[in-house]
Length: 269
Ligand SMILES: Nc1ncnc2c1ncn2[C@@H]1O[C@H](COP(=O)(O)OP(=O)(O)O)[C@@H](O)[C@H]1O
Ligand SMILES: [Mg+2]
Image (cartoon, rainbow, N blue to C red; front, side, top):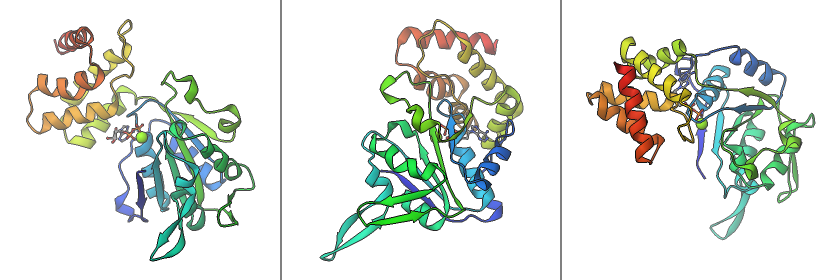
């Protein structure tokens, strides 16, 4: 399990996030009103960055858990460990966040095992409690605790959908790729690349995202554009950068890759 424990950051240590709507206001309101939040959107569109930015801005610790299909409720709540012949309880990231206050962010929550939703339910209604069966404790979440989950509704996996009874406990926000001007700014800020080349990458992504009839599971994400600009800034030539950061990550199919190369060549003119 990958867990990132992030301590309270200094004010100038707020990760860069370019807002494209009222999402910051909404997040702050949800935090203040003690409401859980669900972020939906494709991979690489800025969800995780948004949460790190907001946690830093609010000055609260962030506990991020990347969910996967082996993740169980105990991975979140904690377990007894044997230490020097003694059995000691070790809090999981969710329990830590509930005890100390802070944001617990479950990335790709639909990937986790079903029993995970069971521990989330009492935390997402107005009781805001976390019962720990193993220790017999019932923790009351402090005002500074917030639960944020994200998922990618684009994956056409019917087995991996959030149940209505779970999703209706969250405020929800839809994330998409930033508008062209915002995405250009993001790429410039993230990599230091000039506006011209950033704008070209955004145009390329825009066209790939619109391509119909091409069988791509995922669209070219903002993350991939940032990778591409990073390669360009390091002196890699355009065709190699585009191949390594955009074409190859998107497809294994020779015909599709040829189609992408062609589309990109046309956009570059
Ligand atoms: N609005 C934004 N502001 C700043 N950076 C962004 C934004 N959107 C995307 N990015 C860039 O895209 C990368 C991937 O975003 P991330 O938050 O990891 O995506 P997600 O969690 O949605 O998969 C970030 O590391 C950042 O470089
Ligand atoms: Mg993410």
